[in-house]
Image (cartoon, rainbow, N blue to C red):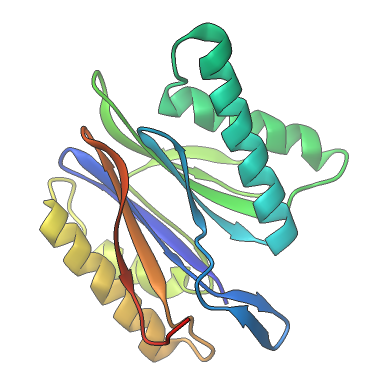
Amino acid sequence: MECVFGMVGKGFALVVADTSAVNSILVHKSNEDKIMVLDSHKLMGASGEAGDRAQFTEYVQKNVALYHFRNGIPLTTKAAANFMRGELATALRKNPYMVNIVLAGYEKETGPSLYFIDYIATLHKVEKAAFGYGSYFSLAMMDRHYHPDMTVEEAIELAEKCIEEIRSRLVVAPQNFVIKIVDKDGAREHSWRRTTKD
């Protein structure tokens, strides 16, 4: 019962993910961080099969770092999104990754951006995105309360509304969530929203 969602505000992008590692009816962990820091100004929230998620996100992280090492400049968020789309499209015809990505980044020239990339290599630049069973509720809340000029405080408040809605409406709701933000100061963890201990 995974949930990953994100939104773009005024000068920042935010990604939220549940932290449960689940297989069938078993919860293996409740502190699995599904939002990877790709580089100083990029966050990648991922949902999907645990093995595919771990393998693909680490593969992307290492290739983004390799590009920076070889060329001396980091990939833009748009370039990183297109790289991921290309890798998913190639894998789709061989051995597909069952992974969905919400990619958030910040560039001095273009500001914050958010990309929606699903397991069949669909890529869209969006203002808000969500994957997983919780997306039904988080997208509904964002459709009602989101506006492009949100402050960080307003976005955190909206994220908390989404989390509360997921916890109260989803039959098997994830209990813990992590919130991360990327802005001109870089990518960082903002907070955890916990209802269960590790």
